[in-house]
Picture (tube, rainbow, N blue to C red):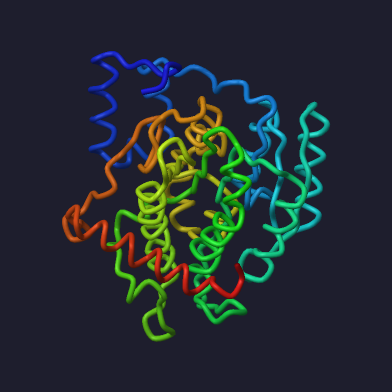
Amino acid sequence: MSANTRSSPTGQWIDNALETSVVGSFTKLGPLLRRRFAHWEGPSDASGRLVVVTGASSGLGREAARELGALGCTVVCVGRDEARLKAIVEEISKAGGNAVAEQADLGDLSKTADLARRVAASYPSIDILIHNAGALSNTRRLSPQGHEFTVAVQLLSPYLLTELLRPQLHAATQSKVLTMTSGGMYTERFDLETLEMSDATYKGAVAYARAKRAQVVLTAAWQRHEPENGTDFYAVHPGWAKTPGVAESLPLFNKLLGPLLRSPAEGVDTLVWLATSPPGEPQGGGLWLDRKQRPIYRLSRTRADGPTQERQQDDLLAWLNAATAAYR
């Protein structure tokens, strides 16, 4: 546990009770009670750090970019919508921060590769890379490379971007790569063969959950193969947050739980806390919610033992490497 988070026995009991309840943990009740009883302090000043945030033009990505800019980071804001990117860059700049816009469609691996080369040419060192881009689509679509779009945006593109920016990440002092995942991943087990859903089987929420599960597998795989004192990798679960994406993709869920949904600031608190914690702290490789590492399984049908997890990790890395080889 980091120095800016302290938990009493009462706080630990409350945290465990919230985690067991699921609803209490994932809604705004989670940060409300945990903040009080674990005595959360504000995130650290991060002046001088260079951070790249994908999906920075709206929702959780926009909030993360805004907060990191306020904490002194130079923020490279990545998104598809030029007008919205311009708006967040102007907001950060007017608040005294430093931000630039990089427009890119991360559903297209060629555009992701172009983005990586532009960023690499501009910045010799990257301290923090945040993979936040992604959306739940109720209609099956294919990327220009022929991959199911959910997998392309939330798995293939983050993998490619990370690998192309390895020299810049390794040039920093113990850099960090953070991936914004989702509690939806708890409902799905990892199965590489069914990761990309067909027309006949496609369901948007399931495709999304499978991609999010794969992000957690990838985070662990990256960390397991990373040399000591290299980059640290984290998967971050925001809880159930109120964002434009949730309202559009899950209208019934948004309506029923609206009053209990987290604000964007509550959703990105752990992301920002991890990003601005000292290099090398805390240990990488895990899944985080509300400033604490959480179990990666909740349902017995999704579980895998240690050797199986490592095999899944290596199979996923091999598949991602092959699928993106033409763009590296």
